[in-house]
Length: 288
Image 1 (cartoon, rainbow, N blue to C red):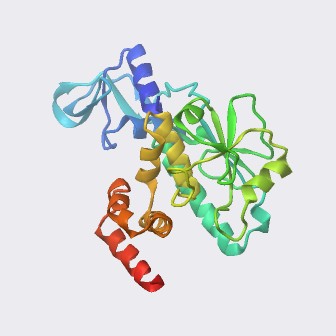
Image 2 (image 1 turned 60 degrees about the vertical axis):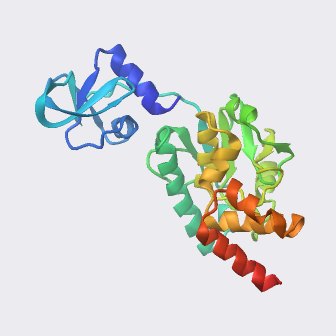
């Protein structure tokens, strides 16, 4: 259940089935986030307008027209999402932030902001926890993290393979605020878990038995998890978030292991476009 589903239920419980949203984007998720983050809310005013969308049984009106709304969405209005769901939570632990180079720190901060934007597509800032002194939006900041809820650590070198059941049955997902798959600080998440004393399962996300090609950016890992929580298969969530470079890396890995005969099949199941094919062929020529 996304925040938008929860919001629509609250609206109906309070008798609101149509909202005049003024100049806002006709999207319940966006409205819910603005209510929690930007101080927007509901005014008990009826206003005429044109219906531009109907989302989960809620009509969204804009401009002038003949339809009359049950309420108006506006800055300073009443916040009806007074107790947003606590879970799922994405936890980014910056315990190793100080050992990063300046360039790595900059990239990590960019990824944190992108992670917040990703979470806002499904939930809101309160579903992001940052262990460290970096502030992003209205995410929760803590100096250390402990929770009683079902928790896993997402680690590319973990000893448990992720699947839909594990992800959907977990409430909290801890990510190390560092990219450690094939980079300078390999196994950094494992070291972070040891340093923090985390005793949660260390779970690795694999795509058909390999971590090669699985996105390693914080925002994309968060997106994979949230997509699966919303009902997508793990494989579909991974492929949907893969960059062209990720697909090239995976295709080359499989071709080198299994031979060139599998190239067409690889392109198909990874939904690779002509640009990916061109990149793969160029790399293969360089190594031949």
